[in-house]
Image (cartoon, rainbow, N blue to C red):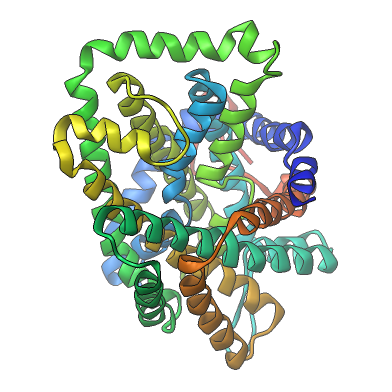
Amino acid sequence: MLERINGYIWNAGLLTLLLGVGVLLTLRTGFFQIRGIGYILKSIFSSLKKDKKAEGLSQWKICTAALSASMGTGNIVGVTAALSIGGAGAIFWMWCSAFFGMMLTYGENVLAVRFRKRDGQGSLFGGPMAYLRYGLGAKPLAVLYAVFCILASFGMGNMTQSSAAASALEEAFSVPPLVTGILLAVLLAAAVLGGLRSVGSVTQLLLPLAAAGYMLLAVWVIVLHGDRIPSVLGEIFRGAFDFRSVGGGAAGAAVSAGLRHGVFSNEAGLGSSALIHSNASGDDRYLQGMWSIFEVFLDTMVCCTLTALAVLTSGVPVTLGAGPIAAAFSAVLGDSASVVTAVMISLFAVCTMLGWCCCGETAVSSLSTRRSVLLAYRGAFCICAGLGAVGTLSSVWTLSDIANGLMAVPNLLGLLLLMKYIQTPPEWKIGRCGKIR
């Protein structure tokens, strides 16, 4: 029954809506993610220089926390799943989801910062809940979104991640899942009980370490099999437009797998990035939007592409799970490849849990600002991490997919109806059109 419900939600209609809203925003902003690339890079690097003088949360902490929520096991397992279902052509459609997803997440962050509210005690009402409630005037939709987000934070953002880490560590080091669960619960408690500030302090160190190590290994594998790069790229483009893949018996397996797993990787359209960026100390909504464009690019266009190329150029069998990337890494690491892969999966899983805890906490804050409620959420989040390591999670995965899909529906509705507020930075000019308003 759960699988049937999940199929109804994550159908061609929702994927088309995600892509369609991204296309509309791309057209509205004059292909800002391409034509404004110089301005975007200048703005985000300039904000890093100001970090030392800024009060409150630094931009780098916000960025790493947001990236942690999306850059996780999906960059490994999600890519191999897309390849196994839709073939090499799925990677092209994953690129498409990221290209238009950049403007989805840009729009989410512009709206989230514009409509966020703070009460007299400094408590924040932000994220998609803010623009659904104050921009759209739809409080029931804001409440529904918050509920779905909290459910997703316990599922996809927590228990499934701890399960992946426990499985990887048990296989590589024979660590009992119970031990992994206890360690994860304790580590998370130390990181999350202090709120977003302490989470940012951890992710700004942990995520760059995990991401840089993983991407360097992937590049090493690709360079080692560099002679196969042209044929692999040809395979990707042929598979993307092969009639048998797009319209034949598989009924668009490459398109569906690429778009769906692209969304699962970068989470553009789900609003998770806006949940974190709305906590930024500054009021520059365009800056938060531009940072989110960079985050989607790094997550999917860089990290997921490296995973795909490492697997495809090495010629290892493509199956579900982390097996293919471990086999690809064995070309440069030998027998230790499975150990290194397990460590990286565990680091990515912890980063994802930390990022999603921030997302869930922002959603909880929109329902209640009582400190006891926030502490209860943080405690429950840590306990669920321990349970996820030792539990059977087939149903949790499906429920998480459902919650993510349900998050997308009100969020996309808000983006569509509030599109007039989604603008490019006034300082940015393109050609004869002058300032984009």
